[in-house]
Image 1 (cartoon, one colour):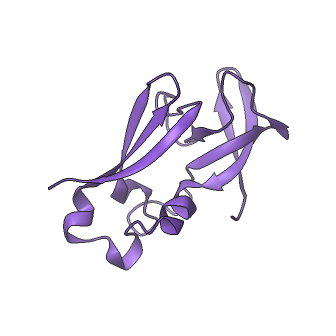
Image 2: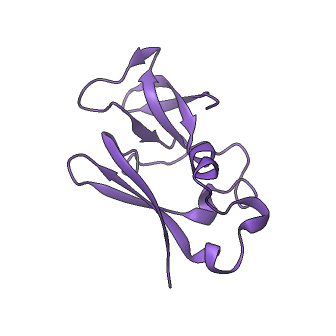
Length: 118
């Protein structure tokens, strides 16, 4: 899959993460994006779960470039500053550089699930 780099402020330093854009993964999985983002799809969300049970949610429309600022990048990263993620973060983690708080920068990602509300 195409690789993406993002530079983000984390604590007191700047880190360059590299991985795959979450939208690329969602498209590959057949998730509705772009012209398909209407009706029931607007009530869908992405649930990301970590190995330690921590979970975060992203509304599906907030991940769709047609609904958000095109410069917003959310990636599933596997490297930081050119090196594999440390064991306490990896093997992959979600990185959301534009968010003011890192609460949804979920590390040790195990599953990514698209949920559509009834």
